[in-house]
Image (cartoon, helix red, strand yellow):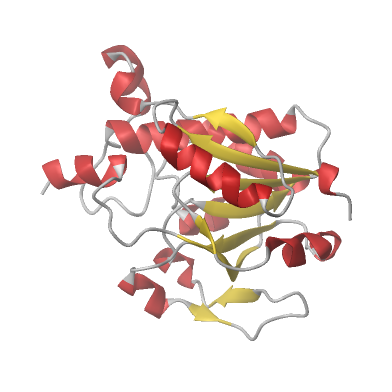
Length: 224
């Protein structure tokens, strides 16, 4: 394993300086130097750009047909970060949103990174405070501490705040994103419509339970 093979990417709005610096400092304790991918602020998109892209294919809409500006910004930000990775020579992409907190030694994850399977999305936590996660059925942990999501219960995994993919998986995910707009955390849609085989889960990062500072959640409140 060579740390230089891993693209550690923090997605962060330029204005979220405090959140970004806190995560950078936490990663520095492990002698890790992430790059920053400037997030796309959906609220600052032109009306034309918003309406050209906001109509979405997703299974998580509950009657809606359009992404909110911040949901669209989230989708476009992850698409951008994946494209940046594909332009690099690195082999693995670890995406972190700037509000996560490290809970377990990620060097353990990196020490086993060459054992990761292709065509798998590795979700690294972030389900804190979500009752939906109780519906996710997981297998026993494998030798590197990951559990396979079983019986198509990907539907109940939310958030895109911390995940790890190989170059091959990134290519497939980016190709799908080029052809479709959807809720970025619609893992069920991704598994159903690509040759990505499955989701594996392990707990390395937590996500805030208090969502008062979430840009996406603030907009969703307006729709209620």
